[in-house]
Image (cartoon, rainbow, N blue to C red; front, side, top):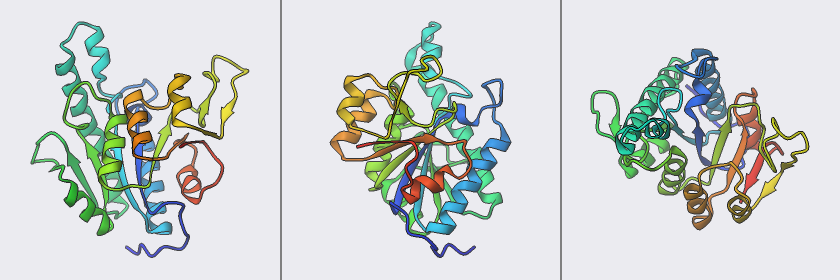
Length: 245
């Protein structure tokens, strides 16, 4: 498969953050193979056009959310580990969709499960990227009480990515002053600072992830993942979504 770049992207190495809910069927649970195939196709097209390095962090909310289990009385750590296993299922689904498009991949997990995924080793992940593979990070960061948003920020810093692309799945195309589905007067930010996100309590990523990105100068682009062509548009630097920096 040829990956000779034909366009110059805004960044040459990125982490794409996908929520588990983005993969969900209309019921909000399970995996919608059509959506997974669409996301895989856009990743492959970006790789072929730009020749950039793409790593992916997937959530597991379509299978299990640790906070939901904890709110129902489960031990929080136990519930979070269950959620981490959900991210592995989603990662394997994305790997299958990518490899059916002849895109080499590696699934790397923070929780050991040698039969289905490699253990996460930073230097090996970078080497996979250099060889043109899409690296899918699963299992969170291996610890309870942390979200996959924080994992995306951590992995981005570790592999020296230049940006985090956070895809939304609810039809909202960026960050607004309020929930635009509930408040028609809400206005969209084209750009916003990390501090403003924290001070205004804007729903972008959890505060740990935002603070980490601020400390490590990692820009975040929040955009509508399910709008066809948006991954390419973000990589070209087109004015879609919201840039947090």
